[in-house]
Length: 287
Length: 261
Image 1 (cartoon, rainbow over the protein chains, first blue to last red):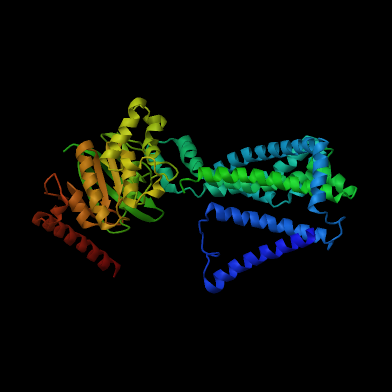
Image 2 (cartoon, rainbow over the protein chains, first blue to last red; image 1 turned 120 degrees about the vertical axis):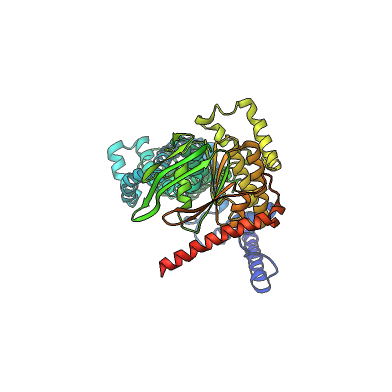
C-alpha cells in the first residue's frame, strides 16, 4: 500500500515538473526559465516543498519496495524510529551539543582571524603581498592532510577537532574576504577621504560597511565546509559527537541510526545556513 | 582679488608623461570658476591635486594661504560618477561627514537632524531621506552628494564633470541648484566640464585650457547677470561669450591636430 502511495507521489511530482518545463520551452505559457524572476512567496514555498517531498517519496519508494535491501537503505519510518530512540535516551542531545560547540568555536575563530586578516590584506596591497601568496600556498593543501598533525599536536581531545575545522576554512575565508573587499570602488574611499575620514574610518565605515553582505556570503559558504570537517574529525578520532555516533552505527551496521545522524547533521547545517541567508538578505536591502 | 586657491608652479608627471607643467593659477574666493579643456588634458589630475587626493611632483597648492597636502573637509569634491554610498540611506549619507572624528565640532548633535532636513529641503530630496541611492535617479544621487558636501560648509567645492552622466534636462536643473546653493553658502567652486554651454552658464570666470601638459590658453571673465535663469542661454551676451569660448577651443583642437601631423 505504502509502496503504491509513494510511487504515485513520485510520478505525480515528476510529471508536474515536466509539464511546467515543457509548457515553458515548447509553448512559452509558463515562465519556468525566465531570467532572475522574482517568485511569489507561495510559489517559492511550493517548489521547496515539492523538491523535499520528491526526495522523501523516492527514498520511501525504493526502500519500501525493497529495490535496495534495508541494511543498505532503511525506510524513513525506521530512520525516524532510530532518531527517536537516540533522542529519548539523551544520547542525541549530548552528542549534538558537543558537535555544535566544536563547529561554533572552530568556525568563529576561523571567521574572526580570516575576516581580520583578509580585509586588511584586500585593502592594503602591501600587507596583501605579505599574506596572500603564503595563504594560497597553504590553501591548496587538502585540509584532511592536517588530521595527523592536529592529533600529534593537540591529542584526540577537543582542541584537535577545533583545530582541524579552523585549518580547513581559515585560509579560504582569508582569500575570499581579501577578494571581496578589493572590489570596493576607489571612488567611495576617496569620497570618504575628502569628507575628512581618517585611515581607520575609511577602513571601517566604507570598506567593511560596504562589504557586510558579501562577507556574510563568504561565511555562509565556509560554514558548510566547517560541518564537513567536523564530521571528518569526529569519524577519525572521537569519543563523542555526531560523527562519533555515525562511526559507531557503521561499525555495528545500524543503518537506520546512521541515516538518522546524517539527517540531523543535514538539518543543523540547513538551519545554520538559513540563518546566514536571512542575515545576508537583511544586510542587502540597499542592493 | 582675494585668492581662495593658489596653484604655484605645479608639476605632475605620471612616468614619462608630463600632465601638468609649471602651472600657476589664482582662484578668486567665493567665485565659480569653470575650466574647459579637451579630454585627457589633465584637468581631473589638477582637481585631484588641489583636493589632496593626488600628490604633485613639485609645486604647491594653498587654500587661503595654507598649504594643502592631504584631503580635508574644507575642500569638497564631486566626482564624475555618483559617490553617494549605496549601503547608506540618504539621511546617513548626508550625516556621514558629520559623524567623522574631524568634523564633530562642525554641527552640534542636537542640531544635526534639523540641518539634514533643511539641506534636503533646499535640494528637494527631503522626500527621500530614508531611501537608498539605488532607489534614486542619477540627478537625485548627485543632489545627495552635493548635500553631503555642503553640510560640512566647505570653503571650496571641486566639481569634476559631475553632471556629465545625466540627461540634458536634469543637467539644466542641477546647474540651477548649484547656482542657488552658491548664492546661499558662497563656497568657492572650481567646475570642470566638457560642455561650453555649462562652463559659460555657471562661471564667473572661465579658463580654457589645452594639454597635456595642462596650460591655460585663455582666461575669460564672464559678463552675465549674477542671477542666471535657464532662459539666459538664448541671451545675446551668453551666445556671444559661448561662441568666443568655442572659437578658442577649436583653435586648441586645431593646434593639437597640427602637432599630431
